Length: 275
Image (tube, rainbow, N blue to C red; front, side):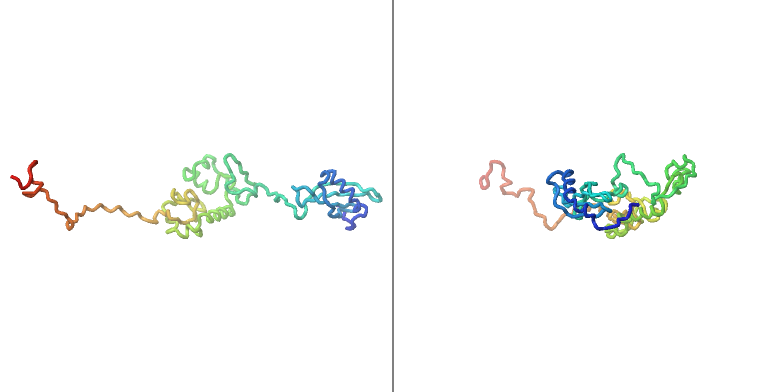
């Protein structure tokens, strides 16, 4: 622990060493890049920091800070440190955020590895007392089916918190309160395209298997719904074709055989009225 400062009053000799501090700042920044004196700050007994404006266009609002000090009973003031520090109105980079806090859904790409923390609250220890050959069999087949449903053979399984977080996430995107579900003719619980799942989440969720539905391949709440419900509408059967109808009331008579004495009845080369 550093020794407490006995006095907040700047040391007179150190406070008067403005020219010394300015020369030190210009030695680092270069001539013409250090502005006017902005004040002093007490750092300790016989230790003060002089602040100067920065004339660099890329460092608007920053200040040159030159710390000077002197030894006890000495009259010679020396330069301790010269740095460029931000002022109250400086543009600063955002605070550092660890990568695990910056990660967002969808950031994981092909070949990427996402390490899971040892104390991840979404997981809890599983039960490993099971034959490895049984645990490797697909869920729903062989003696390892029940073991896999219970989490046997896996080092960690979802904790109650992990289950709740997953349920909240799925409910937000494909839940009963979404606009799609509110306008749906029926819920997913009665849809033939719903694939049921096991485990505790199977009581409230399933997987949509309708390729034309907006939630195809996604986990959906049983209370969700859309216009692609299997029983939303029954396509009517194609009616049989009826026999053609002839309108007998608008028949125009057509003379098929020519009448005697008409032009159509004359022989070629023969004119009417001549024998």
